[in-house]
Length: 330
Image (cartoon, rainbow, N blue to C red):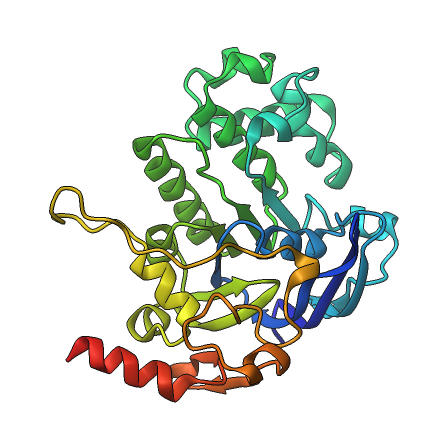
C-alpha cells in the first residue's frame, strides 16, 4: 500500500467573480521513501494541492475526491484528527520562514511545540531535543541561540529552523513548498543538500514544490507538471526531462537561460499569460496559449496517454506536437 494516494482531487474556491476550480481532478501516489516534485508557474495549483493534504484550505473551499494517507481518508476528517497528523506524521517546510515563524515566541518554544504536543515531552526534554535538531540543521552556536527570536537570524538560518520544526517528530512525509525562495544561490544549495540528506537519513517520503527545473532534476525521483489546476505531464523525472511531450512542458524548458548564448539573445516565452481560474476553458487548461490549439482542445479534457517508462501526458495533439519537435531536431 502506498503511503499517500490522491485520486481525482478537485478543489473549488469562491472568488469575487464566482466559483472557480483551483484543482481539477488530479491523481498521484507516493511510496514510502519516494521523492516527488511538483513544478509549474505561479497560480497553477501546486501549493493549494499540498495544503489540502494538511487540511489547511480556506473555509469556503469545496473538496471532492480522495486523499488517503497510510490507508486513512483525510477528506472530511475532523480538525482535531488532522491536528494529530500535522507536524507529527506530515511535516511541512513553508515557502517564507519569516511568516511561518511566530515573531513573538523564542525558537526553542516554536521548534519544541510539536515535541510537547505529539510526543508528550517535558519542557526540559523538549529543550534538549531542540538543541540536537538545531545542531543537526547547521545553526552555529545553537545552545546560545535557543532563546533567541526569529528576527535575530538570517534568512538562511530561519529556513534551517523551519526545517528543524518540520522534522521534529520524524514525519513519514515531508512537504517542502519552495524552500529556497529569496535565498542566494550558495544558501539554496546548502538548504537543498540538507533536506536531501535528512530525507535519505530518515527514510521519509518527500513532496518538493518548485518553479526551478534544475532543483526538480537534482532532487526528486518522480515529477508532476501542473498547469491550470491540472497535471498535464507526469512520470519519472529522467523520463519527463528526456521526452518533454506536452507543449507546456516544452515551453517551460525553452524559457530557461542558456549558458554561452550570445549577448542580447532573447529568452523564449510562452505566449499570453496565465488566465484567472474562472476563465480557464472546460477542456485543456493550456488551450489558447498553446500553438497547437484546435477547437476540440477548448471543450474536451484530454485523457492521460501513457508513454514509455510510466510517463503520462494529457494532450489531444500528441502526434502533431511530436512531429513538430522532430522537425526542430532535424
